Length: 223
Ligand SMILES: CCCCCCCCCC(=O)SCCNC(=O)CCNC(=O)[C@H](O)C(C)(C)COP(=O)(O)OP(=O)(O)OC[C@H]1O[C@@H](n2cnc3c(N)ncnc32)[C@H](O)[C@@H]1OP(=O)(O)O
Image (tube, rainbow, N blue to C red):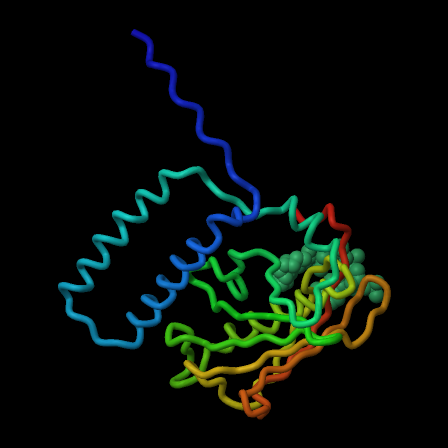
């Protein structure tokens, strides 16, 4: 007896999220982020927690049966660097980004936009990002500063990787509070791009300062 031929696995999808499914992906990710933060910030009956575990596992099994997705690298090598962002334009290097992607259910969902030579972003660390009591985790703050600096690179169409990132934590970063992150290019020396930025309250009080060295790379190295 021979085994029946097995079905070939479905091809891996490596395109950006299709425009017609983006709104529902974002809505699902938003709902999951809300639930994540709610679970950290609220008392919950054990029965409800058991229901959440059961339903989340059942839903995950259905999702995992779908075709695999991987990062849209082709798009990152091409379209991302072809047009300079317009003033005020909402930016996304990819919508699954853990810091600024609206379609990442575990993400910070920072919202960056262009403001002249700078990138400015609204950010609000939900309850699940608390580190020391009543403060956002310092690593989450560093992730925000790293990511927003990545957007500054779009202004000069310069693909680059973070080589060094330094954060000065000047004041506690409050959770569940609207904050503003900014970043801009300080100077460039060949492949070395020096970026700076800060995180402030909505009233403009300084919370953290960042400076970084990004090393420019040819697009082909975005693999
Ligand atoms: C682009 C898509 C945007 C999407 C998201 C953006 C936001 C998030 C950004 C990131 O998180 S990127 C991910 C985190 N970073 C990495 O994974 C980088 C890992 N490191 C590397 O891949 C390489 O080490 C690196 C590309 C940074 C440099 O390797 P190379 O072989 O291309 O460069 P090389 O070693 O020849 O160094 C070139 C110059 O940069 C300097 N340099 C390189 N790495 C450095 C480093 N780590 N610190 C300080 N200086 C560094 C190096 O000394 C040298 O200076 P000089 O020209 O003056 O001699």
